[in-house]
Image (cartoon, rainbow, N blue to C red; front, side):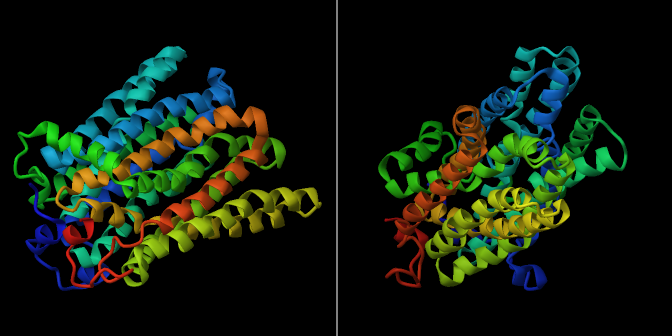
Length: 447
């Protein structure tokens, strides 16, 4: 059996300086840097893939959504097993495998699939590449949960999302904009830029991080493969709270991946705005989101993980998601100048970015459900992240022809409201809140 996170973290020396006060694990600093650069590379394509495939390879909005859904299925599978494999092999090996898959299949995607415009090959190479980033990113997330003190677990995970969201899609979208607007590169050339960034980020993390816990299995008996890989499934099967964690995490990110599919056309065809305005909106949403990730992690540690997820996350997201869509639509129809309408849209987007950070404490809730196996516990959370990559584009592919842009946004709002009710049911998972003694260990809470 693995050590509980609280026991593991006691073996990690405290920094005692600025990093300790910020809740940022000192031994993993280069991992955060590498993750940010890696995800910038991964995020470059997020908002340009659909226009690229539509304009140069004959894809429709629906077929592009189907492609990203296939990619998302791979992401969901890899995200789920990234945590369990981290228990079994150690997070560093899982990150190495993820980086290797990403680079190899991106090269195949660029040099074979796109140059031949072979649809089957595009689906195959891009789909398999979907296994790459979850293994890299969520392997590192398990590493963080394995070395962070329990009292700063929410804050440490918040810093993960600073690095993650800095790349996907914040600086990724900005990099794509700069590449095409300032350096006059085309879609295809910009995808080569993303590959270079992924390689740089991988090297920063894998060479720069010297911390020892993540270089070894996180369970005492890694030979018990079936028990380790099956722990996440068993947790999902027996604990309704684990399923709620998965559902809420999926709902959290559905608009991120859905908007990348249908919002470009919404901007250019309905609002008659240029595509780079959508890229700028995306950059603003996630740039504002960045500083609020550790803020909400710390807020969750102070006022309650569940309470933060419900109000700062679910409820606030429902309101601001509606604003992001209806503000520009209503203002342009009212004849307001495009510049003014777009400025108001950026404000709505900034508020949506703040709201998305409200779900940060959800990962701490996930770990509290099985602290003796942090990887297995996080697999339920990671499954939700990966499922969103598939569910977002799938909703677009299915419902966009039926209910259009407005109907899709209403679906997202309703999903956020549902997630608030599920989040309320996650009370009682945090020491010091909802009747749980403040000095309780996470292992006591889980039981």
